Image (cartoon, rainbow, N blue to C red; front, side, top):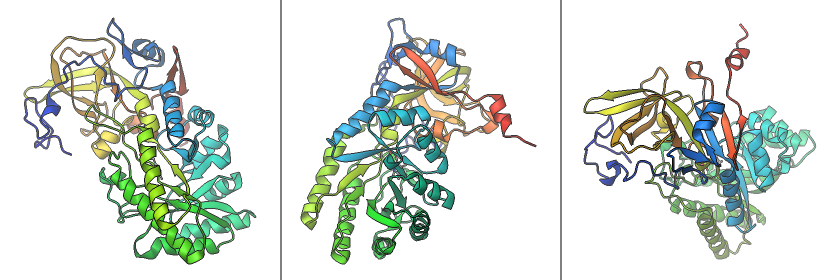
Length: 463
Ligand SMILES: *Cc1c(COP(=O)(O)O)cnc(C)c1O
């Protein structure tokens, strides 16, 4: 949804199709609990705290920019997902959203499983003690080395993404004298209402094997014949940042249909289905995400109903939320460097990070909100664009938002809901040093990923 008829974005005073959006919020000091981590609060004095710690103290200790992650919120979201299905489903956290060794330990302690999609993610998971049987390996082009490592380690499942991979994984498993549990990833032909680059179940894209034209049924036929494979289920992931349950409904129905066809053709009832991740979170107050409980009830009901209709035993369900667990738990803390007022347009606020710590705005037109956090202010709202310090005019962190008009160099501002796909997509563009991830809980803070140093940068430079 575009916010404005102006290609350059809305101007102050524009009447927008959505009407209300560009009215500044009634209270610029208020922190909408939908978009901020659970323990975030504004003190009477005006500054913001998280986990009982003042952001000014965090900036002092860890520097800016920094991702500040509310550990208790992360753990609570893990438990909410785990409990939502009443133990009747397996929750795999999608590690690509954000992964570190501390995160792996939290997941392990909270009873979640872990999706990885590269050798690097697998190595991180194993090195932090995640039991291999609780790891699933994904990816549309896993290397032989990645497959070998996963099979050798004994991962709980490998999700097969192509006909070549069916054979590749079978060969590796046979060579290692193992039988690897696998699922087949199918594309169900659903157009999820999300950005094209993060929608993954329509047919014209690189992931999975199409249900259409009997391709997926053929994949099942081949997998069932190979000694190295134990085919345990069908996988579907329809996209990311989805709010509407209709896509999941169609996806579940089509996957169950395939299970029924497999039973009819082979006399085998596959025991598992995985419905992927992709549940949306609130980046701004306009977004209304669903609670895990509500999603779990809806998914379980659809699968149960479809299985009853097909005369199948209800398979074990698994889901793979990434963003919905880690996204809301962190914000990026920046220091304002310059304030540039463009008459009649907007005010550009430059911060000490940018597209190197949050590429999502440039990559998918992602929307974010922002708040002044080192103090409160009674100044009037001003329309701002928060930009970074990189050598690109597309280096935008928050395209359109309001901040108090007295925001000045040295103030701290924070962009909420940056826990997912920000640190994990961070780059060293302009030789930026990637920011630390600081975990806070009960009045204590520690870096779980430290800030990069110039030495780190130059360590790879061997010329
Ligand atoms: C990316 C991905 C996920 C997680 O998506 P979120 O939007 O972060 O929930 C889950 N499963 C698969 C296969 C993925 O590729």
